[in-house]
Length: 320
Image 1 (cartoon, rainbow, N blue to C red):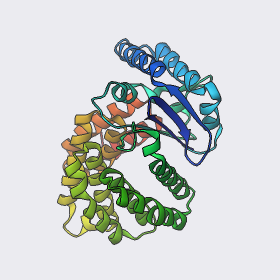
Image 2 (spheres, rainbow, N blue to C red; image 1 turned 90 degrees about the vertical axis):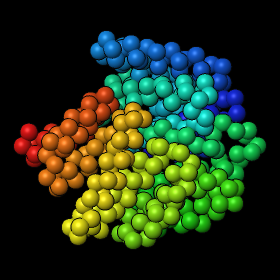
Image 3 (cartoon, rainbow, N blue to C red; image 1 turned 120 degrees about the vertical axis):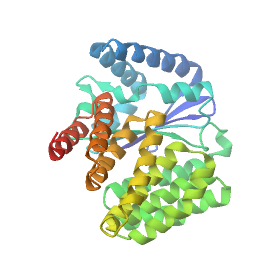
């Protein structure tokens, strides 16, 4: 199940994709709490204090679950995905929201990320639709909800339904509103569905079309994800077997560099795993091991056991 936390007016809005229930927390209450948890998290990491990290995670959980919001999410049988959305990364509330240690959310049984049966994924996204007046975002809020519904349909394997929602409902809204960032994000979701349907050429055309927009917006995380996606498509099309390995390497290396610079461990881990494999294809064994070390550090910080298992498998395959 897909959960979203984002500013809305003077509140912090917490909701589940496709569900009508939502929880609003006043910014005046949320801001000092988020800052406190971020500060305590930094100290706990330096001190290697797992007890304090667990305490912070449970405090976050209890705070969000005032209306049963988190409990319903955790009880679902789906993977746990949490989107943290904010607009201006320099604004105090956005900084606090993006800096909070959401990766360490914990229920009475322990860290959510420790449940190997259901992956726990965090996405920090700067959305131009966030932190604006409620009356101005009513239609945008609906478009974002429908995009969430499309993502859920895709996760359930209902690819045609997901594509119809994205093309017929979501994309026209952002084209009409002139929101270049959200249009580009939606195009990326469409490309993901096209890839899942095996329509690789169409997906690549769409990714190529939106690359100038994402670049012009200066969205570094978006650029990294886009380059990663394009490299994946090239690999799926077999371009690495037809003289295209260098291009794939360049896209992945740049995506990895951006992710390391921004310090996003989930992006570092995911991109790093693929980059290591491409480096190995090119015979760059030393670079592969260096990249693998950075990737392992990212998964260690996330306490991502599945990611660490993949790192070990790659290290064994490389003979290290």
